[in-house]
Length: 201
Image (cartoon, rainbow, N blue to C red; front, side, top):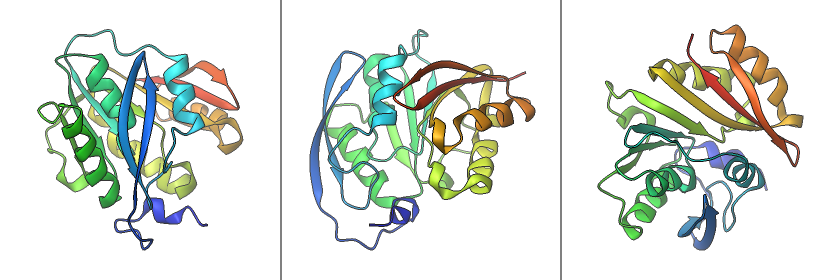
């Protein structure tokens, strides 16, 4: 089955909810995934590497962004692990946004977590940290546009943590981000994935 439907606003496949339990920074999150949304019924390998190879943000409070959120596991992990944080989660897939908000409600996090399509995110929102397993398969140029849309919205001392498959261009993305004025280091490598940390100059 083509993965293109993950990156459309309204997937054509019939909607079926599928439960999934994700281990996130020491917390077991009972979530609902769904057909037409990335990683139906599972925690994908890249995101599991991201959680295993990093610690949650050390700052108390703060505003975070889960970019390309799917059913919301990264953003919900942030909201769970960092009490007092405010989390936005963004996806073009309206089904993913629906599931992420349903999951937030089920976890009691709706007061601090909002999933939305890009145009519905507050225009003046600034993010202390951006966390992402980005949709690499949309292609290089759309991915670059996506990152250059959201990285400028980091706070001056902000950072982004991004997981990318090595064979999907993780190393070249690291160089490209640095060339764009966002110094980027590889902070972990496991199971064929790179975990990158990006900051502002």
